[in-house]
Each structure stands twice: as C-alpha cells, then as structure tokens.
Length: 163
Image (cartoon, rainbow, N blue to C red; front, top):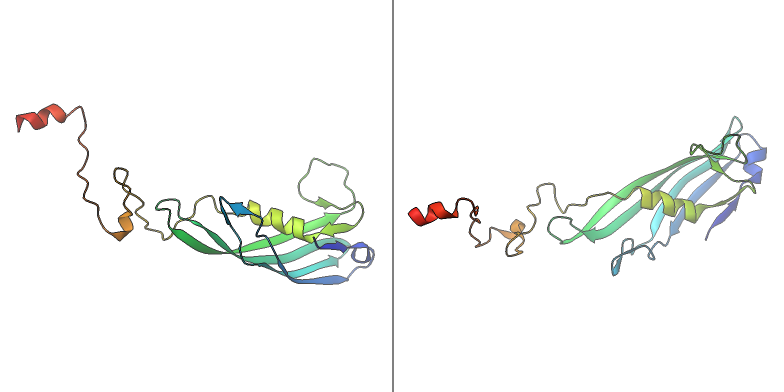
C-alpha cells in the first residue's frame, strides 16, 4: 500500500508530485490465474493548479485472460487514464466528480486498482474476426472447419424423408 500525504499540495499553488512506480496487482484473479501477473506501471503527476489538486497519470498493464469466443489465452495491453480531482470536503456528497480526502492522505495503490478494474474490457477477443468454438463438437473454428454436419431444423426433418 502506497499512501501519499497531500497537505503540501493542498496548501501551495503550483506544487506537484511525480508518480513513477510499479504496482503488484497479482492478487486480482481471473479464475485460477491472475489477470495481472506482471507489475502494473503508474506514471504521471499530482499537482495543484490554481488551488485545484488533481492527478494526471496513466496505468500501463498487460491483461492476461482468455478469449470470450474460443477460450484461447490472450494478453491484451491496457492504457488506463488515472485522472481525478481531489478535495478535502464538498457541500453535495452525492457527486462522484471529486475524491474526498478529509485527512489529505491518498492511497495511490487502492485508487489505481479501482481505476484498473473499472476499465477492464467487457469482452476480450484473441482477434477481431475470431470464429469461436463449434457449438456441437467444441472445435476451435479458427484452426479450420469442423466435421460436423449442419443441424436440421426439426420442423423440416420430415422433408428429408421424402428425398
């Protein structure tokens, strides 16, 4: 857990803090295997500009998962922006526009983990034109066609008897 005290940033306009670190998210599991077996790279800054403290950073990670169509292993590179505005208090607490830090301490790893998980793709494919698996025999159709015959619509099966 990497925590940063931001009281110097909140109290001095123009002050900035560089972020450049590797974060271990191997505990984020995708089934039996971790989604991020290698460290995730965080680079950027937290700065106070005109009295507003914000982060402008990016997370670079390699997502290890399986294709949603053919179930083969896929490694997909992610670049996740980590852009947030920090405040010590707000009048309307129902807004999600700001991250409230009443003690002026930011848990960088926890925030990076949230951003990374929220930016995970809903569908991962090994390639754009992935053909998936045969619904009958389970063969990977990217490797070539299977030997299955097209299923006959049961409503038309009686017509085959006439031929």
